[in-house]
Image (cartoon, rainbow, N blue to C red; front, side, top):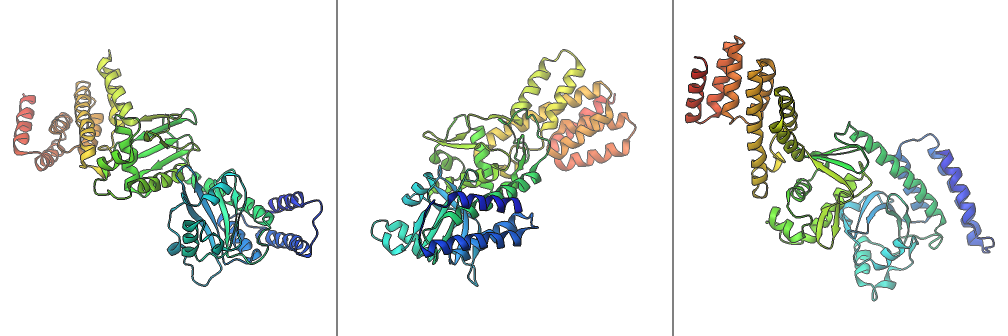
Length: 450
């Protein structure tokens, strides 16, 4: 922390104009230096990015005589901004009730322009914009904002730090820029800590452009930096959006097409709802890759064409096709095992039964049943009964309706002299199979025992 403060002091010296008269500026310069020294003394031993961020926001708020200071993460592509960290000088914090989780910036023309130009945004009197920028004024009214000072935070994150209701040094931005530097470092440090929690050994990742998406069972997304699981998004709609874009035959889908396919009950505000989802997805995906996963184009939403995206469904198909062409039994078995090991349940099991997914999911579930039955048959021919038992039992936990898997399992157990276990599996089969299927199973077992 001490090195950062020294950098701040050097940066402040560099920003001073060669000549600037006035008692206020002299007072400002003296107070900046004293505040930074007190700031460093307070955080000298701290490595906690949240503590550093909170004290930075509190320092900015008090220095400018404001009543609230916050960091907003900005997405200009989606025209959205979201509060990330904030400090409230009031006894009761009403931030979450005054600010939406995601706010639109479509009507904040002056703010967007200042942000793009890396310039400060200075509001000395909110009433002055009432007539010319009524939408901006309405936001100020909602937030209880009478004056404000904000500066962009660059390059990462794309954000801004803003102080509400400033009463001191309202046009002096150098101190806020210096504190924004500390805030940016704290933000990036926190993101790094979040990334460490997601790091696992990625599958099939050879470069930073490679993305591997697992759809069988639970949705998982792997990159060179880690993995995001379905639960990490905390949004069933994001999981469905990601899956639908993958299984759709079209490269890009319009908001209307997406809404008609998977959210037929959500007809209102589909554009805003989708933008909100994409924003949340980008914030979370940014933990494991700098590139955007989903892009907004003139044709609609689509996966980023710069990324090399593969799925477990594609790998499953590849293994099954290669197994069918294998010249040796051992090669065939290894390829079938590789395919089976990928399948952890129906595609996006959390959405099982939804109309837009049924055809695609059923295709792979039936293919899985055919593939496991072929593997069990080959293992039986090789007398690999222990391996057969292992794969059969796991497959029945995924597809208990597969009568043929019971056949190979019971047959293998009997070959091993494990008659009691074989009887138990027959009881399980009776519970999960239709009466006709169970009768056919008994007939097949009786014929194989001759």
